[in-house]
Length: 222
Image 1 (tube, rainbow, N blue to C red):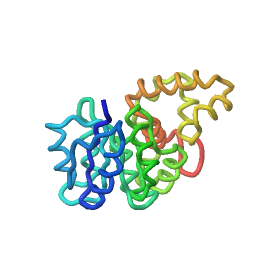
Image 2 (cartoon, rainbow, N blue to C red; image 1 turned 45 degrees about the horizontal axis):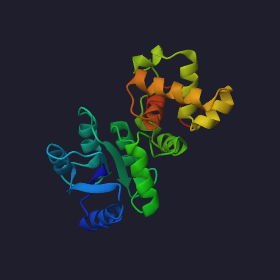
Image 3 (cartoon, rainbow, N blue to C red; image 1 turned 180 degrees about the vertical axis):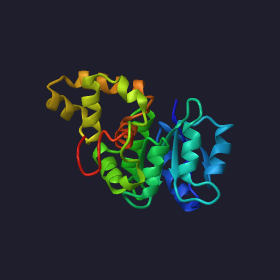
Image 4 (tube, one colour; image 1 turned 90 degrees about the vertical axis):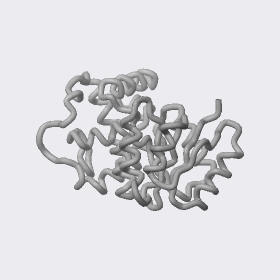
């Protein structure tokens, strides 16, 4: 079955361009389009979607709030935030709202297609290091001090906590394996358990949570 994609952008020409790129792929199908977040949520009530390409700056209901509402639904589609500028505060808010990553609108077609496939398979499409730079820039928006707000962090084992810190610092599974002298398969298992225990969808959300709880601080490690 092809990957079912929804395009959400208030610029018709952009949607047309994305649709043409996706239509040429045998494993993808554009099943819905919307001009703002409210239209997107309405469309999801009657259309099954796997991946949403979500603009952020739109009239009526912006992409951040739309992402938050979509990700709060049972078994939601994955959301990719589309932004004009790298390290956009809207992209930051979109990640916090539950998006699986963010992309620049002028992304090369090949990268766009690869990102859609990656997100559909359950991966995040933003390199953790890129996410970390974004969080460093907007760290003032995060709570500071006090007790961790996510009590489930306390349920992590010592090793899982170590792995979480390294994920949040931008290391890949292979790099974490080298740092902790573990196999890459073992690291992948730890990451999976962390996601399950914390109720998170992907590595991007791990990074966000690590900042929110103070496990990692802007400009430095944990």
